[in-house]
Amino acid sequence: MSTAAFEQIAAATKANAEALTQSGNAAIAGFQDLAKAYQALATKNAEKLTASIQALATVKSPEEFASLQQKLVKEAVDAAVADSTKIAELTTSVFNAAFEPVKKQVEAVQKSVKK
Image (cartoon, rainbow, N blue to C red; front, side, top):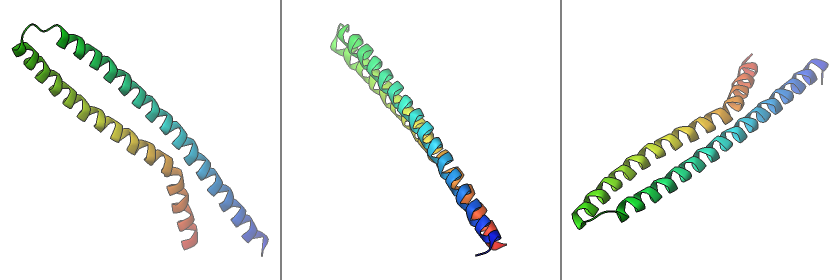
């Protein structure tokens, strides 16, 4: 094997390792962001549940209870849809960021092979 071929293999190996390291670092950071988002969501939902129970406990009539309950359910559904969308977008962003370095390295290897 020639020195030039060996140097090419060594450079490719180093680039692959760097891409995997960058990918791993991005994945770790992204999963930390996801964990924080889930924690914030759980905290928000617990606070909202407590406030809802307190509000329902103060009603004076069955009609008022039903009306408040309907309002709270609508708010909860709207919040669940919004929260699910936010988490889905964050998850997609995390995976894209984690795989971007590997994707770029694969593309670079493909270009070098075509030469």
